[in-house]
Every structure is written in structure tokens, then in C-alpha cells.
Image (cartoon, rainbow, N blue to C red):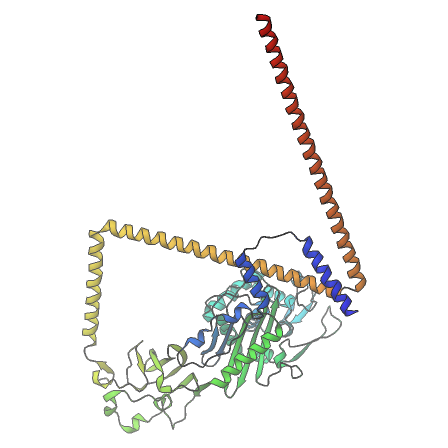
Length: 578
């Protein structure tokens, strides 16, 4: 029976294909489509992994997600980065920002009364059946948003906090800007697809990091099951599990180190996933955007987080004991000849408010770091550390009376004593620094003057050159835009064709044999009628052609007869004259 059903399904699909309108496809497009059909690996598999291009950085795994990131939440160090700043659509991981704003702006013991806004969501999207006039605590709302991904609650909370969805979206965007997001714009609190609701993996990691710093958020996001008690309009409890399966011990995706996260999915955004993990003293967050399948999202999140735990370590010292100084922990040498003016006892005194937060590859030496120093207030300094150009953390602490020039880069262990003197106040000064700066300023002035003189004396050449450059740039931009839009149209068309084909296959698979036979008969009847219509049309066209040909022959004969009569008339006239 199964074999017969498969044969009928194939025959039905063939008939539908015959009925479909023909579309012209170039040889190149046909080759691409054939390749895509045969190639199981999606194009996103080959997208650039930026972190793999850092010298000395552990090579991260290749994954199918269009964008992904792993960030150390204690230091802000990006361990893994794939298309991390590219625009993507977040789906329900948007609710991390929604919940963060709820916790920051409200007392969770307050009660909300929902309005008609709970109905302002897409049909079939996730909800908890909230009714207008229903009352619920904001704490229950937070759990409903994060664990059950309830879109109706997200709408109600947004309206409660800001007065409207658009006003709440403004709050979300302001918070994103405050956190340093680079490619994010929110237009709703739930993440249902909208063209102007987008983010990127890096920005979502920043948002997730900021949320995880909040103790209440950590408690919510790490909860595996929650019950919202009955309300004034609901006569029963609402019980639900956290949608993030890496938290559920009975799930095949369970991981002991997982401490929470948020799932997301729409047909336009595909699967998105934020996952928190803590292991061996490291606290990481991963973001997966646009991957086809929840199982793949969990598997790839696990893969990149394990990569982070296995290949990196974090130094995180706070409230340093009296047995170590800031210099000892960071392997900093005492700065040049200034140390001879300080007693050995003074040199060993621990510095106040000293903290060090750095994440490095297991194979990296701390001596390979470079750092930039800025002055916060007084003798407190902040060190911004890099490893082969990649930011890896910060350190802060008091440096006694030693002065380190602002925004100057050094390698750890560098001896700069040859250019130092110690002033009466005990701060390090640099001989000849003003002279060097003056010389540099002089060179800059001379270069500017030369350029200005040339522009004044050759104004037409400068204008013509500028015009040519602008024309070339405009042409390049037009070509790039055309190519990008053409590629986008082709991809969109193929995606729609794939979706339609899959949908049709699913419909056929769910049909019974009788339904398939009935539809097959209907298709064959339509095909018979179509052929009859074509034959009738062909016969009608042939009859019309014959009639036209006959009419043309009659006209030709009439014309010939008229000619002969005219010739005879002319002959009789000539005969009479003679």
C-alpha cells in the first residue's frame, strides 16, 4: 500500500508540473539550481568566521547558522564570531530585551490589567490565552514572556510600561544604543517578523550580557518550570516548561553547564537561540541566528560554547589580597628608573580597588598582550588589553603616584626607562615629548599647505578629477545595487518555490489513497479538458485559415476577371475606331 501511495504521489506531482506555466531559466541559473538540489550544505555554511582570521586564535567550528557569536560575559571578550554584525531578524529572543526593561522599570509585585492589545498578535503565534480585563502580577508576566514566550503578555507589558507598542519600542532602541549595539532596531516587544525589527549576533550578545547581570533575570531565565496561578478571568493554573531544551534534564539536548537562554522562531527568521553557560569559572553566552531547525540550533550552540570552554581561560581577580599587587597579577614590570625612588616596602603595598578581567586562548602568553591606558580619576587607571588586535579584557587599579600617558600602547614587560625622568611630584615625564609633538605638527602643517597651494593653482584639474571619481563611484554603486537586488530576487524566488514544493509534498503525504486517486482523476480530467480546448482552438484556427485563404483566392479571381473584362472592352473600343 505504501509503495502504491508513493507511486500515486509521484504521478500526481508530475501532472501538476505539466499544468504549471513554463518559466525561462538560463543555463547558468539551471546549473545553480541543480547544484543547490544536489548540495545538502546551505550557503551560510561557507560564510566567513571572523574569529578564525585572528592570528594565534583557536580555530572555531564551521556551522550552518548565518550569524553566531560566543562572548565571555565577565570580560566582554568575543571568543567566536561568524558574521556577527550582519543584519538578521531575531524572532522571540527579542523578549530578553523586553524582560530586561520590565525588571528595570517596574516592581514585579505590581499587578497589570490587560487590554485589547493582547489580541494584536499574529494568528497562530505563541500565547497564553490572556483576555482583556485579566489581572496578573508583573512577576508572573516576566516568567510567561521568558519561559512560555507569550506574545500576548509581551504586548500587554509593553503597553503597561510605555503606554503603547511604539513608545516601548523607542525604549528598547534607547537601551540598545546605551549598551553599544551597532546594528539593531526594534519595532515590537515580542519579535514577530517585521522589516524594521532586526538585530545582529554581536548586539544580542551585548543585550543578553546586560540582562544576565541582573539577579532577578538570572533567576527567571534559569527556571525550568513555572505555574501562573488562576486569575480573575482564568479558573485554572497555567503551567508551562522553559522552551529552552538545554535546561531540561529529560531532553536529548540537555547540558549540565547550561544556565538559561531563550528560543525564537518564525518562518521568515528561521530558528534563533540565545544560550547561557557556566563552566570552569567561565560565564559565556552564545547567540545563533537564522538556522533551519531547532535541533540544529541546539547542536550548533553546544558546539560553539564547548569550543569556548575548551580553548580559553579567564583571569578574574577582585579584592586582591595583601600578598599580591596589581603589578604582580598582571606581570607588569615596575616602570623604569622611577622604582629606585620608592622603598621596597612601598613597592609591595597592595593597590586599592584592584580588579583584573581578561580572557585568553589557552595557548596564549600574557606577555603577548598589548594595552592602552586611560586615567579614570586621580591615580586610578584602566588598562584595555588586546591580543593580536582582539580586545580581551580590562584591568583597573591605583598606580600610586606613577603617571602612564593616556592612550599609549605598550607590550607587557616593556622597559621605557631610557626616556623617563621623575619630577618633584613623583610622576613620570618623558624627555623631548613636546619637541616630538611640535615636529609632527610642523610636518602636518607643511603637508596641508602643499595640498592647498596645488588645489588653488590647478583648480580645473582638481574639479575634473573629483568629477571623474564621483562618476566612477556612482557607476560602481549602481552596479553593486543591481547585482545585490538581482541576487536577492533569485534567492527569494527559489525560496518561495522550495516552500511551495515542501508544502505540497506535506499535503500529498497526509492524503489518503482515495483522496490521491480523486485528485489524480480531477487532474487528468482537467488535462483532458485542456487538450480538448487546445484541439478545438487548433481546429478553429485551421478553419479560419482556410476561410481566409479561400477569401483571398476569390478576391484574386474577381480581380483577374475584372482585368479580362477591361481588356475586352478596350479591344472593342479599338476595333470601332479602326
